[in-house]
Amino acid sequence: MERLSSYTGNTPLLKLPVGDGKTIWGKAEFMNPGGSVKDRMAKFIIDDAEKKGLIKPGDTLCEATSGNTGIALAMVAAERGYKMEIFMPSNMSEERVKMFTKYGANLRKNSVKEERELIQQQLKLFKDCNAPCIVFAEVSGSIQGDPNRKLSTRPQMSKEEWVSFCEKISEMGKYLEGEGMPLAYHHHMGTVIETQADTERLMESTNESVKLTLDTGHMLFAQGNSTQILSNFIEKIIHIHCKDIRKNVLENSLKNDLSFRGAFLEGAFTVPGDGCIDYKPLFDILKEKNYSRWLVVEAEQDPSKANPLEYAIKGYEYLTKTLKSSGIEF
Image (tube, rainbow, N blue to C red; front, side, top):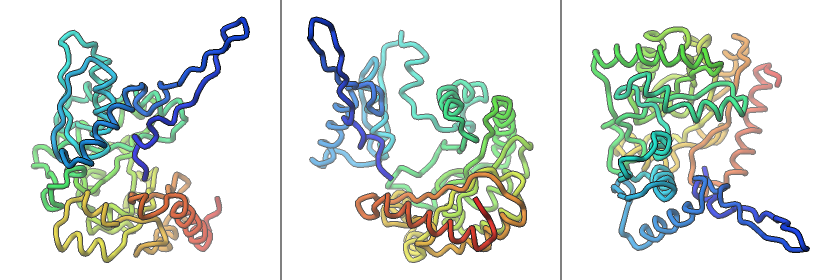
């Protein structure tokens, strides 16, 4: 998976005729990932500091800013596992402040009202793209991007927190359902909803508006059983991430209690057909239950080790073949 910042600078030149046979060429810097020319500076600064060994993932970066520089730095920091502290003038607009934050569900700490406000930009984008749902996950306390946090230290909720969280997720699900954009909750390693037991409890404790994204790779990583989840919650599943696992890397990651980031960089995940998951039993259930929603080929891998196009083709070809063997046409 390529980093978003890798697209920085790949902006087109626009020919702007101004009359009298003259032409101005304009560089469309608004097409950078963060929306401005400041993306170039932010990427260079962090690249340079990393090369010099001045910073490492998990460190906290600070910036005093009133706009695009902070947005650009926050974007690069988020994708590389840095914490970002932004200092801004007190008269900054609320809209500008929100742009500094990469959206992630935080219902354990935020109110539903606050989450609804935070999700508006993403909701509009998804509607404009005619997306089938919003894949939603709680990220408060997540250890995903911290190379110093072991797998065993992921956040967990008390009984009281579970009750509050499920009430909030249900309310959020109802709101998004009313917006025509169903909430498909994504269980994920390193978060409060990680295991099969967590996933089952969430589905059983929330209302019908809360749907599920089943991720086969994350479920196996958490020592769960995707076949059981499919059988028990097929009516709630509206999105499936077909991600495979390299068994030897998984076993080593669990044995040595690596960080999630470390396991990912070691190559724990791969595309379907390149790991240890047999998708035939899963697809047989989908056929039996007349599943007609999305299947996504997915693998979080280091692109320098696994060519994205080659692996995407490998995963697609395997899924196509296996789906047909289960009698599923598409």
